[in-house]
Length: 565
Image (tube, rainbow, N blue to C red):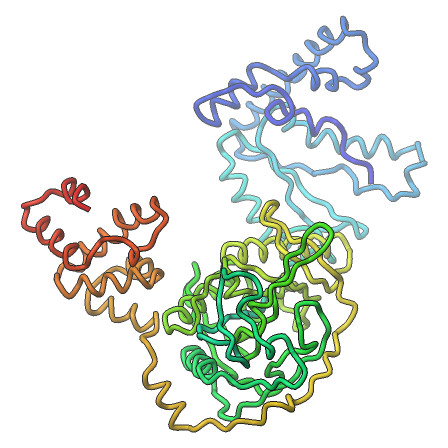
C-alpha cells in the first residue's frame, strides 16, 4: 500500500522548529509564528529538492500565502461548525497489482491527501476514526476541530465508535483485544538451622563450600534424614495460605544432570505435595482479589553457580537447603496483580517466621509464566517463563513488558514460541535464554531412601493452634484497637520490625496516631538515610513514648522533638 505522502510530516511542532513557552498553548503559538524549519521548507513543495536554493524561499513564500488562505477558510468554517468531518481517504488502498496502472490510480489515490491536508496546513487538531469496510479494506473518517477544543472532537469520535462498534482495524474489522494469563512459582528457603536432608548448617554469605557434608555432595552410602523443623514450617505456610494438609509425607526423585546438582537428582514432592488448594487475598487498584494456590511442596535447593568468562564456580553451601515451592493457579492478569501476589506471600511467610524472604539474597525466588490469548477465549496462549526474578518491582516490569512483547508478535502475524527468558533490569526487557522444544522427562519415581511418614494429627493441630499472628489479622486489630487509617496500617505492617516497635511503644502511651506518624515520618526518614532498620537503632520504645508525651503536654515542640531523636 502506498504510504500517505509528505504532507503528513509538515507539522512545524513535531518536525520543524520548536519555540519555548510557559505552557503547551504558548509553545504552539510561538512555534507556529516562527514557521517551519529549513528541512520542512525544502520538502514543502513537490520537487523542491531539485530547485535552486535561491528559488526555495520565493516559492515557499507563495506556498505560505496559500496556506494562509486555508487557515482563514478553516476559521470561517469553525464560526458555524464545531467539527469538520471528511473522508480519511478518497479511495480504498490500491491492490498491489494495480500499482503499475497509471491511468486512474495516481489521480484517485492522491486525492486522499486533500482531505487530511486541511488540518496539516491549518495546524488544527485532527484524528481519524474507523467507520467500516469497503471491498474488505478498512475505511475511516477524519475529524478536525479548533485548537484547545479537542474534547468536542473526542466526544464525536466516541459516538462514532459506539454507533459502528469498531475500535480499530484487525481481524475482520474489530480490534483484537488480548487478555494475559499469569501464574507464578515461588521457591522460598525455610528458616531452619540445618539442611533438608542433612545436619549441615544453613547459611548465607559464609565462605564458599564450608557449610556442606557428605549427604549434600551425594557421596556413595550416605542416606538422607528429613528435617522435622522444615516439615513444621511447611505446615505453617500451608495453614497461613489456607491449604489442605496431607498428613502422609512422601518424597520423589527428580532425575536430571546439571553441574549444580551433585547427586544427579533432586528430592522433591512431585506426586504428593504437603498442601493443596489454598488461596491468598491481594489488594490492587481495583479492589481485593483472591488468588488460588494449587500446591505447596517441600524439596531441597541446588548449589549456587558463578559464571565467569571462561569457566564457572560452584558453591555447595546452598545445596540441600530446605525449600517450599508455592505454585499458583493462573489467576493473575496484570503486572500489578503479580506484584501484589508476591508481596502478600512475602509478608505472610515473613510474619509467621517460615522464611526471612530476602529476595536480594535469593531466599525467595520467582518464576513467572505469562501467556496471552484473545479476550474471552477458553484456550490459553503459548506460555513463556521468566526465570529467577528477585525483586517485586522487577516482577511487575517484566510481566508488563512480556505482555506487550507477545501482543506485538501476534498483531504482526508472528508465532509465539515457548521460551525460557530472563529479565534485564538495565533495559527493562525480557531476554530469551533458551527455547523449549518440548516437555522434559525427569523420570520421577518414589524416593527409595525415605519411607512414607504419617504425621500425628495432634502434632499438626498443635502447630496450627500456636501460629503467629498473620498480617491480615494484625491489620484488623490495628484498625479496631488503635483506630489507624488503612493507609497507615498498610505501611506500618509492611515492615515487621517497625510494627513490633510500634507494639512496644503502645505499652507506654495511648496516643497511637502520634506514635504512628512519628514512626512513618521522621523515624523512617532517618532510618532510610542511614540505611539501617529500627531494631538496629538506639531508639528505645519507652523513651520514644516519653518524647510523645512531652510533645502532647506542650513541654517540647515538634522541632525540638526532631532534635532529641
